[in-house]
Length: 446
Image (cartoon, rainbow, N blue to C red; front, side, top):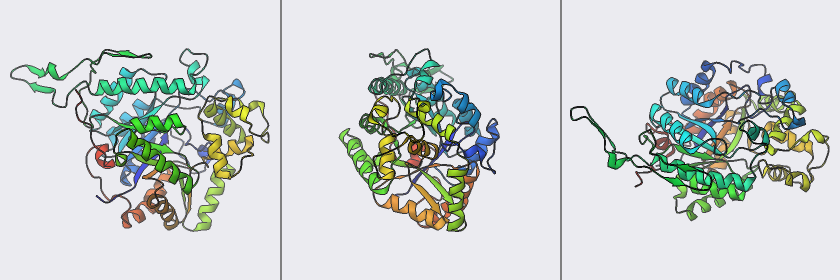
């Protein structure tokens, strides 16, 4: 089969995209507390033949900055985060082919709960469910679940490793052909094909079996976005889709090669794991129109306090104690237990080591550490094609500057060009998300 781009629409169930000023854009739809809002966006992405609509999540308001949620609430810096199970359920009912994905934490949930949730979504969607595995990032989340502080980086990944082992064992506790459902004989399922898992580890003990039969995909599709060395190893072992945030083509090529090699070292087929940088696409009828849109998105509607609130959240470090022009020191980054690699990514993007708090805030607010494709539809397609064909990626996680307009413009203007060039599908390949991605369905594991 001809190699084609994998395309994921990145969402958040709240008032903003990953861009902290998106809710202020004049044409932004602010009906994010209604189901119609999410269904409309998902139908747009399905019209554009996207593989997946995926929702990011956190389990707390940004409250690290100044030890308060005040600025996050005042500036609309991700204070709203709806429950994703309900949102995905509504999207499943309004679509038929696009994958539906959600973030669930291995730090603050339990394996049985997550296994049952995503197995249920996979059945109800006809095999379209995906789980974005995260370890969570900050103390505010821990404090909503009875902890004074968050687990350390390596401890979170130790727990996540066990979590995936237990969860996949639960998904595999039913054989594909366990259900009989013979109404005449009264035999519902074969007990020899439904097994307890009896998982015991440092963090979890799970008896099983799962109360949901084996799903259309065998296992729901797994997404992961770790960028540290430990994160890359975890993704190589478990992920079907790996999100990256590489600032430039050469860095992305190095990351792509490294991640594929790690996948192979785990005995997996590298072609079954898709590497997808998160990107913005700002499309205009002319280059100057696109550049003006970009200026408005990235400058006019961003408040510094919103940026710092989000930066403090993601790095688990209170930046209220610093001025914007304070240098970013080694002591500062070492004191952070949040996402590692953010500061290094910004350094690579700016091509210098002398970062300030202002630099970090600007990049956190606008996701400048990932690629931005700005221009006419032809120009945006050219840039995406260059990344795709030069060993930098297998597709993209497209983040919207505003909703629903950014996705509507991309589907209307850019997707037809990618299709004409043979880079993107014209029709869906099959009923399940794994069919769309072209990755193998795992068989029953005894």
